[in-house]
Image 1 (tube, rainbow, N blue to C red):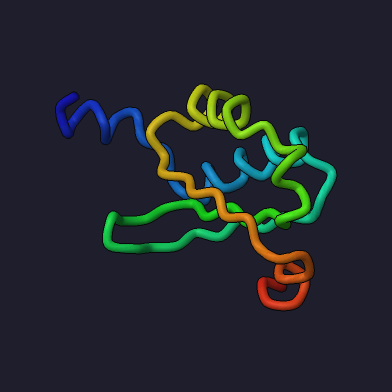
Image 2: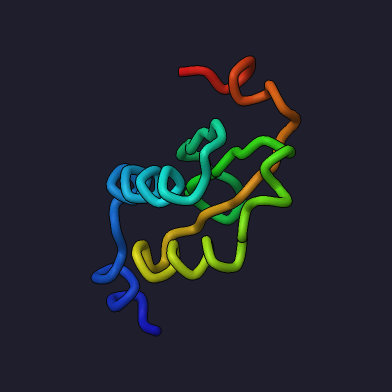
Length: 91
């Protein structure tokens, strides 16, 4: 895919974050946090979920929904110890 097509189909990260939060709310009952971050690969949306949710969370289905609704937005999923979201990722 050419760079111009990628740019034309891309979505702003702030808008993608809002849509991603809607998807997660419909996917899980547990606490979560979505942050816009950067690493060596560029900007991404980091999704934090508690470790206790790992067995209940259908990652394949979730990825399919995210790909369909957000397209080419880098999303990373991170399961963290219970309490980490509330204690370290507060607003």
